[in-house]
Image (cartoon, rainbow, N blue to C red; front, top):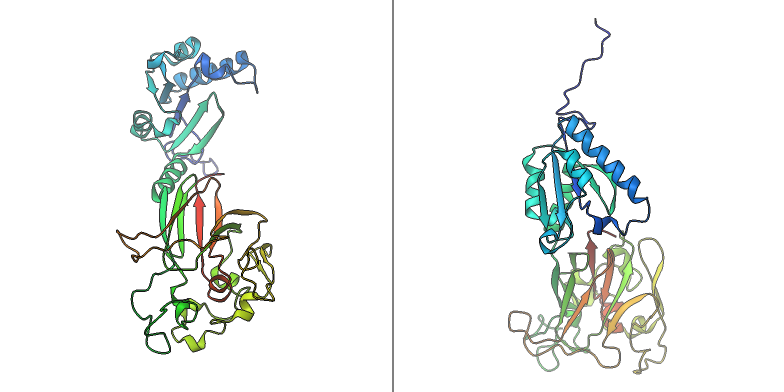
Length: 348
């Protein structure tokens, strides 16, 4: 009959079928479900035991895992074990089952594309096996830590005249000093709970971190500092509109992120005072950390490299998001755009 709906292939169907799914049962041990308060223990065990009987009846592969049995904890609940009819337990010493190579290998060896997970600390759910793999690949792709060179220590004239050729090269009177005021790289990405180490190079640097919206860009944020092109793209110092401009550096600036929220409100310093905090980009509201407020940080005597001896500032990022990292020297930040970003990924 032409109006009969053809039967879909159960191995490739987008819905769960006994032929395309594998069930993982994790930590159904008395010590583990003793702390579960969202459902009665009798109901919890009745539900998972029924799930075990269904997998047996429909011949669905099961991966059964426990934690710390070899160190004295009880094994899987007896009723569930009976329903599974001989499915072996994979004991772990890690709380995250997916990070255990034996557990993960057992799931992968089934060749199934859909993974159903039931655990004592999670609601029974189903996820695409591809999603699980993608999440693990994302974590593997991002480093746990990163390093950033904060500024540049000059060892020779920064360029031809009008750059200084002798004397205080790279100092506050050198028209080419803006070329030293940048982070390398300007943007890094780490996984949540990872840390970034910033090594200071050159003089006159302080340091602060603020969270910004994920759509905040360098060019947009820079327009609240010294409007126009990124100073890092300007080769000719005479074309840098705010170069060595104390007037701009001492103005009040409201710095907005991509959502239009004020991230930093820089107070004006109309008398060019050299006292803290007016001589710094200083806004304590929602600031994650700062260093170099009273005294600038030590940039060392050896340029960036394996033997560099500039001061180190390390910060651990405990929350995902996008973070603005800046030099709190008013001239460096407000005139020369000395800032960068850290992206933190991998969960809430």
